[in-house]
Image (cartoon, rainbow, N blue to C red; front, side, top):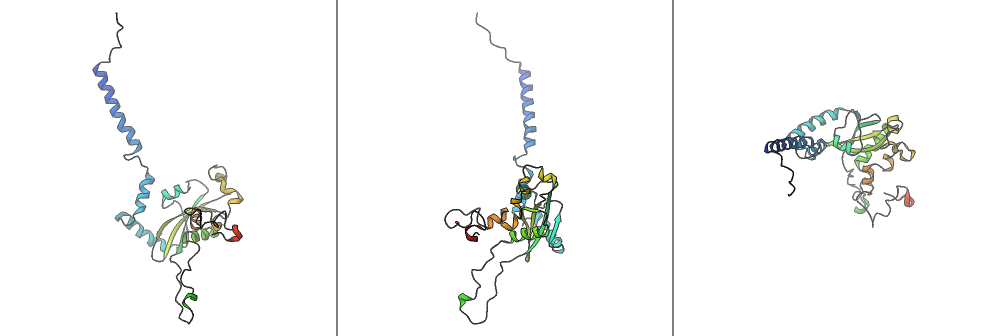
Length: 231
């Protein structure tokens, strides 16, 4: 006699298993979110276009309040949580957020009315060697000499000023020393990072991010290399 195969489960059991599987799928999808993206993605998308009705009203009121404040303001929480987290900020002891206000403009020079050659007037092709963001980081580092600048990001600007939030870290704090992901900043080699162009804004301004090869021979390895001709 031929061996009989296993009997199939009754139809009622098949229906109940299918119903349980279909009920479990929406629960799993709800944990991931409808599009599989987290909160930081949507915060970043909102900051890409400040002309929308919601962001325009919020930024307008922020500018009104920020103009009345001082040059350096220590804030409790970052204004752009997505940018701060991407640059290394953590909501723990030892991290400090400082909002800095710097002047806006390209330092264009007035035309000289006295007699001289046009090429000797010194107006054209004379630009700042540092960008405004690096200036903000250096000023904050001077204001808080016991902290080190980790990174910074743009938070707003009007006709006269720009505002940047600088992420500062206390290298002498025990929480920072015990964190293996950030305790590298406690080394003396990483002191005065903002003044040596070692922050992300500093490296970008020195041409270390998008520039390689021919024409960038003097930008590496440091500012003092190549007879101090580094960018």
